[in-house]
Structure formats: C-alpha cells, structure tokens
Image (cartoon, rainbow, N blue to C red; front, side, top):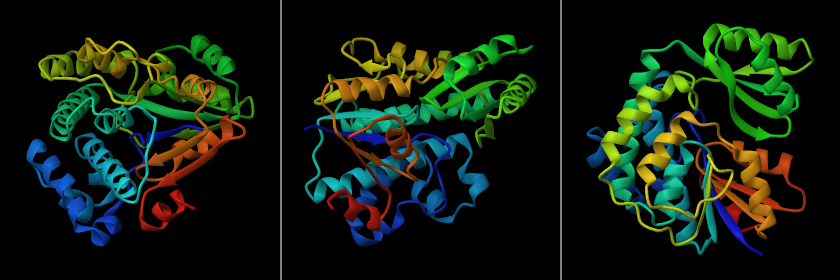
Length: 303
C-alpha cells in the first residue's frame, strides 16, 4: 500500500479555482502571499478577479495552477493526508518539487516565474499549437506525425488512447485531420504554443540561465520524472534537467506503469480539475484515484 500525490498541468485553470478552501481556512492564504512576493504581482487577485482569457496567459496560468495545487495539498495535509511519492504533469512537476522538499515554497515560485516568463516569450515568437488525439494508439499517432509535412511531434503520452501532438500550427492541423480520418477525435488545447517541442528551445535556454544558481535538495519522497518516464534518482543538475523538460515529451503513461510496478495503489491529484485522475483510471486497473480541488473533493480524499 503506497500513496502518490499528483499535480495538475497547464490548461486546467479556471476562475476562482481553490478559493473556497481559503475561505474555509484563512491560513492557506499565506501560500498566495509567498507566491506574490516572488512573482511581483498579486496572484490571489489574478485568480479571484481575472477573466478566463487573462488567467490562461502562461505568466499567470503556471503560478496560479501551482499555487492552487499547493493550497489543496496543504488543506489535505492538515487533515492527515500523507504520501510516499510525488509526480506532476508538465507544469505539475514544479508543485511536486515543492511537495517533495526539493524546493522551498519561495524558490518554487521564483523558478516558476522564470519558467512562465521564458515560455511566454518563446510562445509569442512562434506560431505553435497543441492538439489532443483521442482513440488512436500512440504508435499510429507517431506514424502520422512522421508522415505529415512540416514540424509536428508527439508531446504528451497521456494514456494508451490519448496522445497530445504539438508543433507548427499548420502541421498540427494537418496531422489532426489525418488522425480524424482514422476515426480518432482531435481536441485543440487552449495553450499559447507548442510546449515540449523544439519551438520552446529559446525558453529552455533562458530558463536555465535564470535558475542555474537555485538550490535543489534531494527530495524526501520518491520523485517521478516526465522526461524519464520513471523515478528520478540523480538530482545533481536539476537546472539542466528542467531545461530539457521544457523541450522533451511528457511520458506520463510510462510514469504510471512505473508507479504501479513499485506498489503505488492510491493516486490523489491536487489542483484544478481532475485530468490526471481520469488518466489514471483509464490506464491502470485495481487502483484508487481521487482528486482534490475544493472543499467538497477534499472531503472525498478521506472517504
């Protein structure tokens, strides 16, 4: 019996997410205060008062989702939740780093500030897009990307029947059309560019320069890596590892298999929506998967 805390990725944000937890426990607002001091703007106000379009901007979405995830986790910990491992989907790895003790809360938000700004700048300089392909095997999606004119690659391996493709907008649209011709479903993602592809190399370079002096400690629980698709054991150069993460595919399906193989049987997702919970349920048999994003789902974690 082992439990893992999972953390939501970009695109899951919504207005006023997680704020009912703060209304129930005012001490949780300290997380937003720490975040705001590091970011240079009032993150709580962004979540509470912004419209969906503003909140979707990378410079706001990334720290907002991370803060919401950590608020949810802290609320659960106060009620007795414990965990043996952590993992996140793309952006979620940064909340996982804080949750594992690898980064302090302050450094976590300093690092996510550097990441979101670098990715926002790179997104503005490229016409990239991402699209989820459903009901088609990953190998078939890979084949279509290879055969499509222009730059398009698998960016997120989410489940046996969900692969996200990314690249130049025209190529992504062509590949998506080829997938739908095979009876797949194509869902464009509400993101600013082609994350986890070579279009983000300028962001990876700028991010590395910004965080190479940050102290990353050994985590106090097992930490699973998107890039490796399994547990990470080498934490000696996390700045380089996280720069590579920006331009590398997310191997979440491999991670889930590795987690189950080591005896993890309870998966609790912290943060807005329940995308990862759904992926766990679609991918693994015989496990418990729950999410925590508000007061109601917090109670469900302990049911």
